[in-house]
Image (cartoon, rainbow, N blue to C red; front, side, top):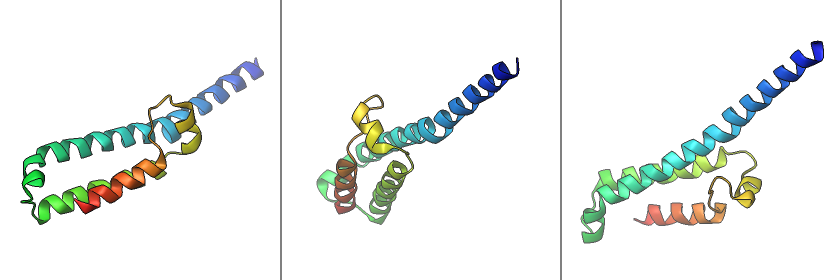
Length: 104
């Protein structure tokens, strides 16, 4: 009976580890991608006409920094990218996207 309880505790701890340390950062990363998409679509007219102001620039720069930092919060990123379950982009693509957002 002791081993059954121990196995149950082990499964619980393992599932919490996966949830808190892997799944939640991935969800936050995906949310960050949607926030960037939302901001770019909201400011699309101003960006295309070149009439951006400091507010737009600071918003996009902040989202760029948050995107880069949220990618580093995901443990085992290279492995999770290779198995392609979560739809994560390459880290090089994230860095390139952050550079392009900062140029905007």
